[in-house]
Image (tube, rainbow, N blue to C red):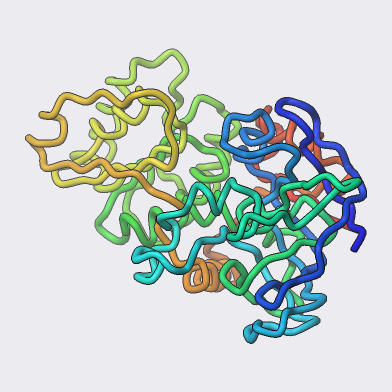
Length: 366
């Protein structure tokens, strides 16, 4: 079938909206008319060839929409159902079978390979294969093919123009605090970086009832937003020695954060996050670049832990309904971070996300 898609033809080039040929759904696939899709920094890293994608590729990995057709083996949804898309996984490895799908043994191939498991592409342009299974969805397009593994059904009246922003960065930040390193009453949380992931973590910490919630960033506007979303203390790192930042967190929390989350990818800030921990505290990081260098005593003498996190350490089918419930009760107001853009403005939305002009762009379709 003919669909419109934002195609990345080569590394570094702007996305080009093209008409491409998308396959009919196979027996285990679901054809969804995309209604909204979030824009994430990961899409831009892929566009620049900083992730192992093969060009040409259709990006987009926070899709949502209405089921148009379902293959014969599909049982969970039918035409007319509305769904959110989540990252795909193999479903066969021991980690997936244990329900820890963000740590799938084949995560790199499934996420960035852009093809079906058998290696076949889902789309073509003028006879040329186009990778259309990025994160198992390639949702910068008017229609996308997904599977039962990577959808979460939602209500028929669900506001997809905002909900599409939930399914990668925000579930990662919220999952870190509510699932991987649980906070709650009597606990303190420090979040380094107040972008979409960090602000989701702050909202989750507030929803958990954490006593102290410290937001660390270098952008005053984001720190003000963090305070409005539940941070009890904010720390501006501009001109600050990072050892002083760690010391301030220890002071305002009365001994250090029980949980710290780094969303910045900076090894220096990850080190500062570890050094801000209370005894037996845990620091998680969701991405990184460069080497993290820590004196062993920073961990050993106080029993601290440092761990990497993927996808919030969650099972999306269980966790996303939990976030939706918190949102309906006014305890996870993520829609305050969303700005909608028409699909034709995809490159503008990406630029605004990178510049910090908007926290969470979400594309919508006519």
